[in-house]
Image 1 (cartoon, one colour):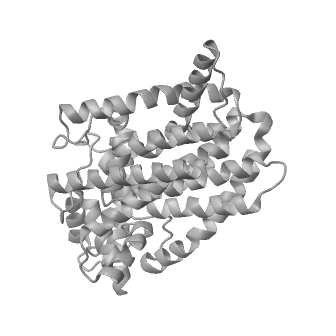
Image 2: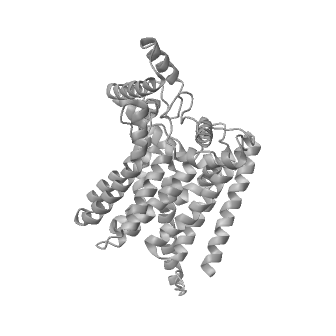
Image 3: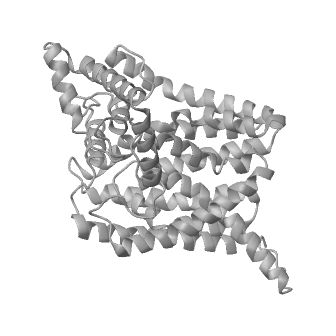
Length: 420
């Protein structure tokens, strides 16, 4: 009962912090305005799903994965054709608060220590960047929840080896697919984690490989309906979206800075229409993706020095202690982000180093950071993209904090058991 009350209190604190942040955000930008262009696309696609219209935005039929729009669509069924944007904010706030509890559950699966689980959850609950990503109408909040559940069930199944927990593997694959449906960049995480885990643990590769294959198979089955739909629309196999080409060129082009600036899309579009005046929208979307991807690869191949310089810039943008957006950055925001981010990063890195002497299950907490970093030194980068990695780091940080506390208590003869 004591644990139940602690977790309930934690959930409401997380909820209240996010509601307060939502009020501040609406005061800054307006209650019924989107700050990011991505938010409008998710909103309109959710509206189309609810009304039974074609899943497209601005003539683009494979522009966004349907995960987050599907989560938004009930708002239009419950609150009418034009619900307040606040309803979407509150939905994300609830999802973000549930993620706080999910982090504690993941920590418990790994360490079976209630104190450690509570510390990890509190770190996530009060993290300013995590709070803000729960407020914005973006896919990060549900993605983080699904990611934590995916890793949790993978770790749960891995710990039972050589016995096989098919139910945990099934759920891990299901939540991995749900994460991909929200953020397509997660598509290659499972094979990446299996490959890296096998390299680091060559003598214990069987449970890593076996669990990874099953999870990837389940995930693939869940993605097949989307692949069939995309083939029907475009006439080609499209694993996620046709935004990969523009995203790649956004990160690798002569004017690239590491930040997103999609003005070039119109230039490519006009050039393609000039060459093929009678081209259909679906064919145009596919060909634009191909042209922009090829242009990005060609530029990077011809200018490896500039591509490397950009990679370093994007690395620092991802792991920066300041907000990258100039209009949002100020001295107070910098201090808040620095004080909340740097201790968790340092402690999490210490935990990651310690995990070298442990099994794959603990290493799964820092493998996402490697994967996300690798992606965003190629594509555009921002501190918002590190939120999932920092959620995992919060558990590693809690692990280190609790061990330090135990040693400190032992020095003074306290020696209490934090799991009781």
